[in-house]
Image (cartoon, rainbow, N blue to C red; front, side, top):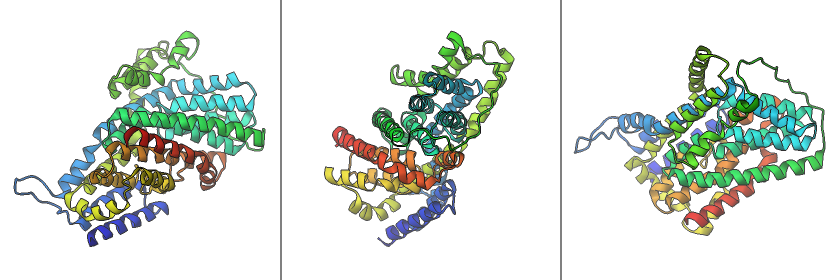
Length: 436
């Protein structure tokens, strides 16, 4: 019992360091992993009676680093495709074409760019692509009269919608929780639709309340002459690139990495035909390396999460934590609904309901208790993740967007959190209907 109390106290201390930004999340996960093993009494090196490794250097550090290897590789290929779309100017062209459709009508342009950015984020990911999309979308919105808070909200809602059905993100959640890919995909897709509808309502209400504003000025992105052809029939086909992986995975049940590779070829065929073979090969090579760089933060995070999951699942650690976790884990439908809806803000600041923070360990403990069905635990954490994606002040995309528009990141969180909370409730209720 004492070991369990000390582990919980240590987890709270590490969370405090993350919240106060005195320790980065990636480093915190590694420290947390080792600390849990030491407090829990897991030997550093050792073997059992059958000669099987039981030391945490092997079973937690070594094995944990590769536990989410599949999710890491998928994220790398997704990052490669995102970089190809950026380099060939597919993403930029989609955004600008969307703006042209809206003319100078503020609400129409806002809704079109919201839709286009959401579509892009189903495929592209990472801070680099957020910056690329944001430096195009935000100045366009400002030029037609959007205020800085609305411009920020467009980016954040779009990121939340797109990431819910981003194949790389879905695969990562499936790997972390241990749930079936199709089940995660289902609840995430429902979440994406719900967030999209709330976003549409938010922008309509926002413009009725505020009208047009021209007080904020953002730097306009400079036009760049490109050898890649994004016009005519081939250009239109190139702009279908973001939906290629979605169609191949959802409709034809193709593997994720192969689907991203097909999308890579598709993008090159319809953009690089005038660039020449050598230039196209150089572009593919460079974007592959850039894709590795862009996905490095999320890949490192998944390495830390894999270690944390293995640490939590060590028999002595689980035995120490089980009494307390059994006391707080909801067992009935009403308790489940209240737990995930009322405590949803605990997903912020890498808290205990954040799968990309302490939540990875908490989810593993809940699954191990066998009090709730596996999919119920998965659905609960997916439900609160929409709040994390939209509102968490520790998200790099939130920090950059707010910095670019001049908004204060915690202020944006406070103003958007009440809009996303109903979506959390809808997803929790959906989880109960489907899996409890």
